[in-house]
Amino acid sequence: MVDADVLVVGAGPVGLTAASELRRRGLACRVVDRLPARLPYARAVGVQPRTLEIWDRMGMVREALETAVPMRGQLLYVNGAEQARIDLTLPPDAPYGFAALPQYETERLLEELLERWGGHIERGTELVSFEQDAEGVDAVLSLSAGGTEALRARYLVGCDGAHSVVRKGLGLSFEGAALPEEYMLGDVEVDWDLPAGYGIRSSHVVDGRTDDLLVCIPLPGHGRYRMSMLTPPELSLAPQRTGQGEVAHGLSGDRGPQPGIEHIQAVLDRLSPRPTTATSLRWSSVFRISHRLVDRYGEGRVFVAGDAAHIHPPTGAQGMNTGIQDACNLAWKLAAAVRGRAGEGLLASYDAERRPIGEEVVRRTVRHARGGIGSDADDPDTMMRREAQLLVGYRGSPLVAPDGSSHDGPAPGDRAPDCGGLTYALATFPVRLFTVLRGRDHTLLLYADHEEQTDRFDEVWAAAARAAPGLLNACAVLAPEVRAPGLRLPAVHDGLDEFRSAYGARGGEAILVRPDGCLGLRAAPATGPELRAHLEMLFGRDAGPGSD
Image 1 (tube, rainbow, N blue to C red):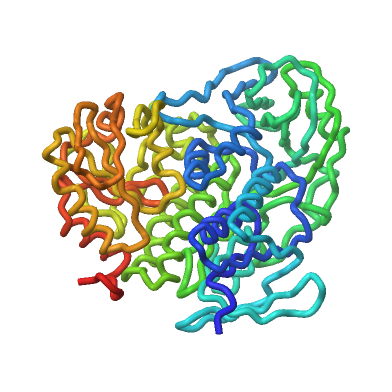
Image 2: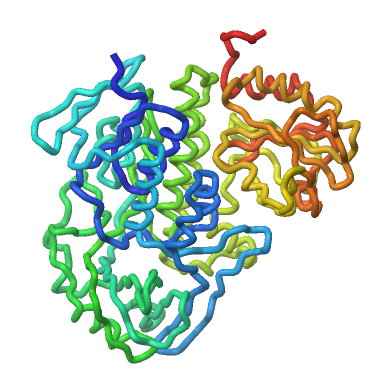
């Protein structure tokens, strides 16, 4: 007997993303977290534009935009003198900018989303152990009320952080090392007149070596920042070093000394670009940083995501955002597997697609922690798109069709860009492509710049739907002058020609957009057999009614 389709361990941003995406697809999902309540800590605060795109697909971007504050840039100071001003500007094709949002607010929004899908967090519940076989996973949970519960799930997802019980239970290696520096964090208000929305990085450098550092990230609220700085000797965790085999990463919590307002003020007195007074200390902690990566993202029916799979310096706010993408990548594949519609290699593709991303992020953030974000040789546009995670993609993935033709737009495996100016026949206002894609899984876009190209669209869509029943949506995108009165397929007009421009679309082409916002296939001209073969690779052959 199976008690749940998926057991998610950990209710941070990654676990809540996975659970929400699983519940949205109708899966019986249980979410457990050992903590009795959400922590009031502004740990991960940077939200990348790519994450906002994901939240758009999930249906919670409005709430995020109303809660977060813009991250407009960073001011750099060395030995009291301003050295640079970096503006976080993206090209106009990016629909969202950089944002700052305390992690507890991110978790609140995701928890509310989970509740809208009928899910909830089982607080004070801890995974003790698990074993798996060919059909499922047997887990033992320690309950908040005391005692234990034996649970059987089809799959288990460990989103339980750097000290993951799931990772250890799978016996995954977690190679890497700890950085020698220790830092302290504080969430405070200051009364300086520096421009709102800009982070501050102020350092003291002697003979090319930084011996004092202050980094301030703006938060919602007047003059409010999360500040990080080197830990003074009296607060060092050195006497409490972790034992052999333990990971030196994360906040000290109640296990070590807590920085006071006086410790933060002392650093501000030395390094603040303006004389200022810190007040309203909401929380503080000492933390250490390691960089590590698992040797594989799962085994059998058990997977890891987020900090359970990769940890690294917080430079560029890449960690939480990368974990959220892990969860989105895995969730739609698990949903297909639970429904019995996972093609050979679908679940294995989670490791094939996400571990190279984790490896690149770990390597880059370590490099940036030592030399700064500007140490890369990329041109400014590429650097900004990379930091925004808009370049994350899966070219070469076993799930992505080869790109056999030339075009000016994104290739299979690339991020699916947004565009505006799309119009429905019954609407008097234009919509964005992301509006068309919102809340959907795989979406087939069929583009036509002449009416006769639409003659086969209904046939192509029918063949695709038979290959992936209940797993696929479709929409025709028609050039402004195209009229197709006999088309049964839902359609929008590319009123401003932005879709054709953004995608380099060709008349009669099929473009398949995956649930995680990447392209899975481009086929010009669109043919039923080509689409069917690709979808059967993803989801296997349908053995139900209507299959052939």
